[in-house]
Length: 83
Image 1 (cartoon, rainbow, N blue to C red):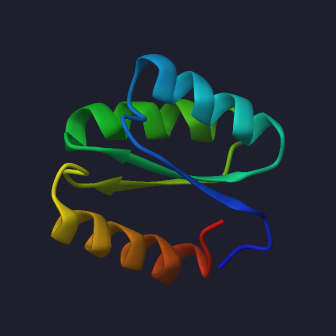
Image 2: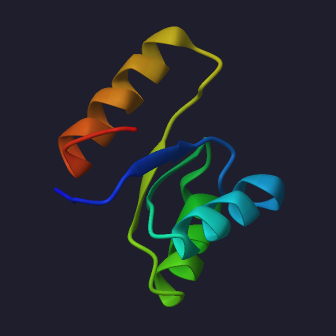
Image 3: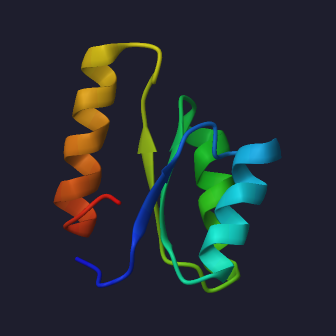
């Protein structure tokens, strides 16, 4: 559970997604990081945490509605909210 605002970032393991996660994290957001690959997501998660950013990884395919529903439920269960 967190008191911070929580942002869900898809494709968060690299490129624009990871840069976006760093930017929001630097502004005090908790990051719900999503990628479809665990290994890439783990690396990005370590990078965010090394910067002192509160973050968690949620692996899933956001092109599938059922997966998105599961991911959102996981994020809310973990952080207590999704903004």
